[in-house]
Image (cartoon, rainbow, N blue to C red; front, side):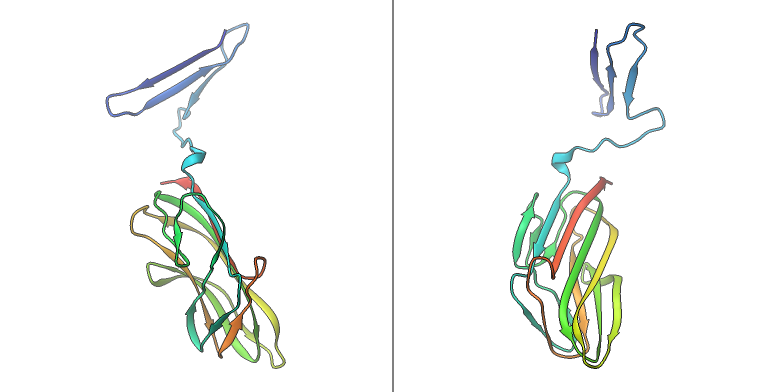
Length: 178
């Protein structure tokens, strides 16, 4: 015989006990376990993927990277190339930007609330240059109300960034709640 018991206290907190069928009736799973834990609900875990579908002209200095094509955005948290999570928690963010830089410094950053939060690739491209890509990824905390994230690059000269789905993109997903 199997048993599923749900109990919640006055505050709405509680536990779930699932008893698996067994001949000795001793297989009991308590969630979360006695040491605490987190149960994630997949429908409440935002994820997104955007890419640049055309080239973007950038000037010398810091430039916000524009991602205009949506592959998916499960909670509609991206607008104007800005990710604004509405669920508090920890997020994995990833971006890659391609360009044809020649004899200059290039760097990529994740901005949180209009300030540099994490530095990514920072390199000096040699004379003769090639098509290069620079990337960044990190785990970030977002409060679910006012925090937002954007991708910026530093370019040593005026350039055009690559615009295609596998060359200039910004992705992210929630890893766990707060």
